[in-house]
Amino acid sequence: MLDDFFIRALFAGIGIALVTGPLGCFVVWRRLSYFGDTLAHSALLGVTIAYSFELNIAISVFVISAIIALLLVNLQKKTNLPGDALLGLLAHSSLAIGLVVIGFLSFIRFDVMGLLFGDILAVSLNDIIIIWIGGAIILLVLRLIWKSLFASTVNYELAEAEGLNPDKAKAIFTILMAAIIAISIKMVGLLLITGMLIIPAAMARNISNSPQQMILFSVIGGLLSVIIGLFTSLEFNTASGPSIIAASLFLFILSLLKIKQSIKLKN
Amino acid sequence: MVESSIKMSLKNKTLVKLNNAGFRINEKWLVQGVSLHVERGKIITLIGPNGSGKSTTAKIALGIYKKIEGQVEKYTNKIGYVPQKISIDWTLPLRVKDFMSLTESLEEEKINEALSLTGVIHLKDKNLGDLSGGEFQRVLLARAISKKPELLVLDEPVQGVDFTGEIALYELIKKISEELNCGILLISHDLHTVMSATDHVVCLNGHVCCSGSPIDVAQNSEYKALFGDQASQTLSIYEHKHDHIHTSEGKIKKN
Image (cartoon, rainbow over all chains, first blue to last red; front, side, top):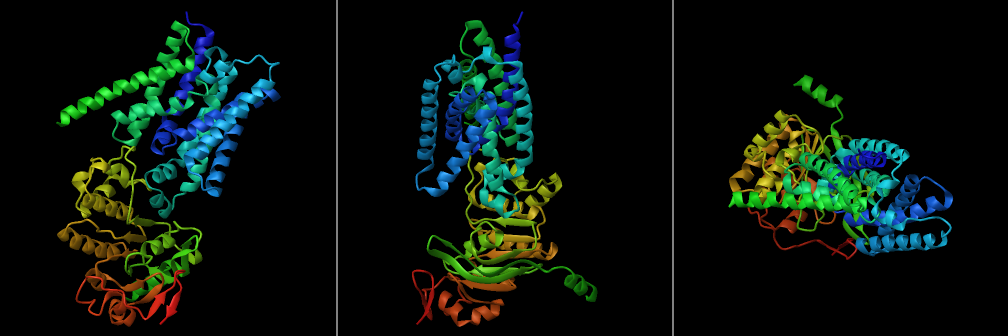
């Protein structure tokens, strides 16, 4: 028999994979993987704030990540520093501040490993509700900005010239990134969330030839990773986040075989 | 005849209007003091040497550049744009038919029709990254006309297209402007085409050097100074002779 906590983790994981699939494709297309990392690192600060003031973790992480994202956009406009330096600056300083604050919170029992790498035991019914409702909202908003976001991902000027709104779409997408990190942090852990976004999408890129197909395969890849990863985690008592990511890496390697095959066919 | 002229006057004919428009990056003016308007059924062509601000003017008209000097008034949102340079990221798997409905969802029929017109219907299922430069240019033009826009902005639309294709595409552009009754803002280096197919020419060199009908412009002394004395006979751009010089800020100083 499967335990209750495992069923909860499975439900949570499936909800997350449904959202990371499409978002992950945009992260790959728009080259935002380090941006995702930065937001994820800043999430630690969000978590510590949640513990300090007894707030909901998802909401606190969402607010902090969104603030960091807006800060980044502002700094990009105001300084001459390259984007990756700014990302590094924000990622590491928010991570550091988060860890310093943890030091002060010695009176609270704190599972740092669980925070960094995910913990399936920690998923409550409340978390599942947040994941599914939050996820549904994220997908709905993504659907609404789809045309502008996708067109400007292909070419900014075409989108702008032909009456779409790329800047607004970009800003909203940034908020969506903060939201997905907020809802998946308990499950995957903050060090590995970007992997959950990128690896299934990268796998999908290898085996698809249209954007819609890539999103579909990315979702399927994410779902398989969650299911395989969680069963492994249960079986071998490994942390849930790394198990899910390792499963997605396995799928990615399988997708490379397909590329090899199609190159052979071409020759 | 009478009926159509009444119809024309009822409709707002102007699609986009630039009034003393200019754009600069930091202190350097890319173009300034441009006034022009594009009307329904008319082809306006921008000519001028490299770096004279042709593409910049097009981008001002399209609203891509926002912090501009002067005013832009746009009276339509149905716009088709063929940019001069386009960089598409190949991390995105994109077929020609996906690209066609990028900014507006189109029926299969319209996609096929536009791709047939520019002669690339056979490439419909191909990946965008596998096209040659000329093929890609034809797809770009097909995409811009497929949604039957009211305003077409074509920045060097036939670059890289083979010689016979070039003539055919220019004929197509002329036909489209008549059939759709759309306004076209064209940027072209091909002075022959400019002279034969255009209603109004604007000659740019950081500012408007001269403008008018092709014949007027060809006889204009500034145009001759810019393109050489025999510009109507030949296509090559001649050395830059001016009755005025440009200071580093892009201001005009008379000799």
